[in-house]
Length: 186
Image (cartoon, rainbow, N blue to C red; front, top):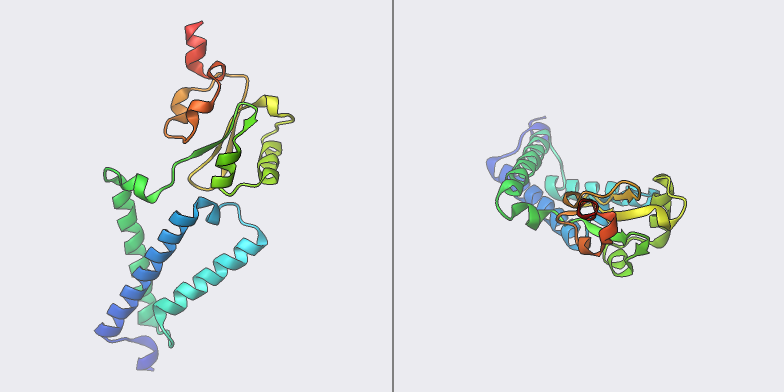
C-alpha cells in the first residue's frame, strides 16, 4: 500500500524535473510552431491534445504512477505556470513567451504572406468572416490573427482607433482612410 501512495525524495525530484522538462518542451513547441497549434480545435486537434497530455503525464510520473508523484507533478505544473506569469510581467518577457498578433487582412486585401506564416487557410478566414457577419470583403477594415490563435474581425463603418492595432505585425498596411487619425485630419 505504501508503494502506491508515497515516493522517496529522489523520486519526487525526478518527477519534478521530468514535469518541468515536459512543460518547457510543450511551451517551446507551441512557440516555435505558432499559436495556431492550440487555436480552435477540430476533432483531430482534440485527439492530439489528449495524446499530448497522456505523453506528458506518462513522462512525468514514470512507469508506476503513485499518489505522491501525481501531487508533485501537479505542484510542479502550477509552479511553472506561476513562473511563466511572473516572467510575462518582466521587461521583454511577454514578447519572448507570447507571439505578436498578425494582420491577415488590411481593408479588403488578404495578406497571403501573413496567412502562410500563421498557417491560416483561406477557408478558415472565410468562415471567420461569415461568423462576424461579413457578406463581402468590402465590409472589412482589418482582420487579425491574435496571440491566442483566434481570428478577430474589425468592420468598416466606424474609424479604427490606431491604438487597437499597436503591436500588430503589418498594422501599417491598413489603409489610412480606415483609421481614426485620418478622420481627425479632415
